[in-house]
Length: 218
Ligand code: DX5
Ligand code: ZN
Image (tube, rainbow, N blue to C red; front, side, top):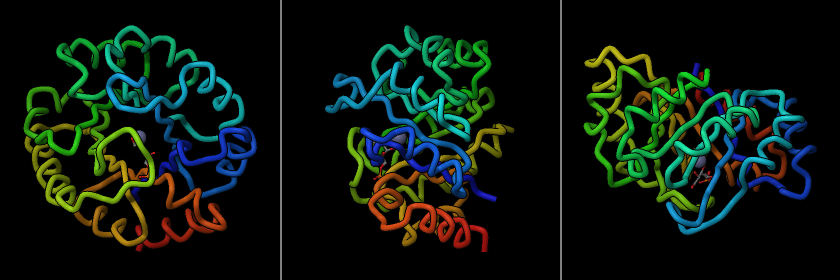
């Protein structure tokens, strides 16, 4: 059954405790936390102290998406702040193999994210070491963007690559996920769906997550 990971980027930052508690009563499996540095992506979101605060009220594991340059300097701090999964960008890591080993040594699940223009085959020689591959279905930096349709083809190609490499990695899709594309993504091989604005801009996020869960479980 696919996992649901609502992205707190679209939540009310002035009420993060209430948002985390609300998600604790929902069908969410992970809480997706988007960290942006204003360098790797043209936006700044939140960092370590905010993650720590979310962790104090979270019921589910924190799935931390690092859209930052030189993530190797901050991995231990994010782990200490409560990250269960640490996902770095392929495009931000010239020494990706080392970074992935660092994450695993810290006891976190190791994830690598790919920007929309980055082909999946660049992961061929590291796939077996990964716990998670995040395919960006929008350009990272902002919530509320439209899903890039080529992602579906990419998910299928990644699925094939992971099987060929004997990799246990889960396939996560991040950006523009809605009830319109969720089922097709799961059918193509997605294991984790991240959804920000679709969940938080809805009148009832708990009901929206329950509906999404039902749709992708059918
Ligand atoms: C984009 C972030 C996403 C974003 C998804 O840079 O990585 O996680 O919050 O938001 P929606 O679902 O609104 O596209
Ligand atoms: Zn994200």
